Structure formats: structure tokens, C-alpha cells
Amino acid sequence: MRLYLPDERWRDGVIESLYEKVAADTLRAVELDTIVRDFPAHLAWLRARSAGEVPAAQVPDTQYWMIVDDVYVGRITLRHWLDAELEELGGHVGYEVRPGFRRRGFASSALAQVLPRARARGLTRVLLTCDATNLGSIGAIERNRGVLADELQIDDRVALTRRYWIAT
Image (cartoon, rainbow, N blue to C red; front, side, top):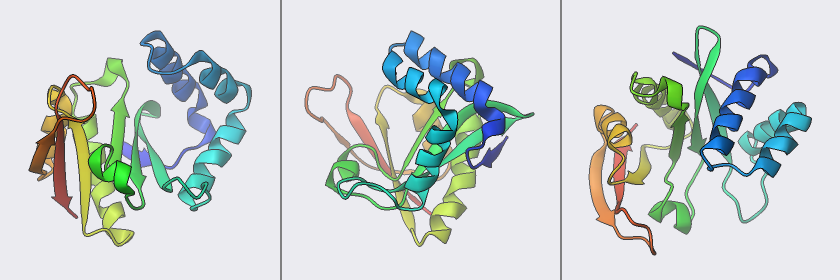
């Protein structure tokens, strides 16, 4: 598995993954329709975010796509810095692996590959957060030398949120 910047050649796999998210009720159909209708605009939006072109209240980020044998299997996003909200929930890194590709080590591998990119951006350590019930994410973080900082009860979320730091 390798990480790549978003590109038109993986459009079909990305669109398939978005349909999976709508079916799982984790993405609104209107968002999917917008991306399907104008995928080049979606790519331009991702590139602009990476270049720091975001509204003042947002944090710029760079999204990388996980590709295996030319198949899109997920994404990992590196936020360039943290605001107060991301310090509590979200962190520097977020990732998502398509359901049919989970439990194969792709999140662990993607995280290992993004850490040097974080270092190149000047981040000496990165924060990752996950639900205390998300054993897959906990494993990926801990396999990459994640050190548990704390567990928080955030608002009315059912699960505690675990916060980890990883030195880059």
C-alpha cells in the first residue's frame, strides 16, 4: 500500500467508497451528488486545502489516498496544525479504510507513511484521537508508537475519547 495525493485516476474507487458511506449513513447523499457531478472541482478543493486556502476558521490539511494495486482503499488526512477543537477531538491525523479492506493493516501502514510527512511540515509530534471502543484504530496508533495521553468524556458521546501523541 502506498499513499498518493488525490488524482482523477482513482475517481471510480473514491466514488464507490462514498456510496458505501451513504449506505452506512456516514455521508449525506447531497454531498455525494456534488462530488459525483464535478469530481475535478472536488480534487481542486482538496488541493486548495493542502495549499492552505481555507476559510479563516478552518485548519488546512493534506489528504492522501491509500492505493493498493491501483485500487483506492481509503484515505488519511494530515492537519497542518491544531485549533482548540482539534486538540480535544480530531487531532492532526484522521484516516478511514473502506469496509471491505479493513483488518489488513492499511491504517497502520498509512499512519507510518504519513509520520515523516508530518515531520517535514515541522511537526515534532502529532495528536490522534479515537473512540475507546475502536480497537482497530487503537491498534494502528499503538503499532506506530502512540502514547496514550488521556481519555476524555466529550459532550454526550457514548464512548470515551482516547488521545494519543506520536513523536515524528
